Amino acid sequence: MGAGVTFVADAMLGRLARWLRLMGYDTLYQPTAEDHDLARAARAAGRLLLTRDQELARRRGLRSLLIESDRLEDQLRQVLEELGLDNKSVDARCALCNTSLQAISPSEVKSRVPAYVYARHDEFSWCPQCDKVYWRGTHWERMKELIEKVEEAVSSPDS
Image (cartoon, rainbow, N blue to C red; front, side, top):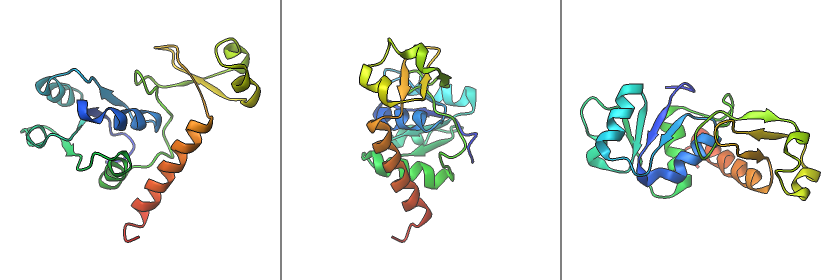
């Protein structure tokens, strides 16, 4: 399927949706949407529906992936493995609204981030839709470690 795949995630997969966005995958997530609305959105835009709902996954004419686990690490592994994805060639998206992030200069964010963050980081990203500022702090390092662990498990499934 490759890096061009886009997703719709059901209400049970909010955490997975946020992680996929930060990995750069265009992922619609509307936690209050009804099943028929999710199916319609997926069909209309040619998106793959990610769901934990077996009945929803079986709907005709709907490309879907039934997510088997409720653990984030297992969910990421399943998506990467079954779709042949990685996070090497895509730019991050906003975890909140799914918009592509843009680079922003440190001087432009100085008044918007904690002083210790400004002092320790040279690179920042910004969401032009919801105005959130991102930087690669300790949360990013933990996220990167988990993604690398999942990708390693995908590339060597016998371990």
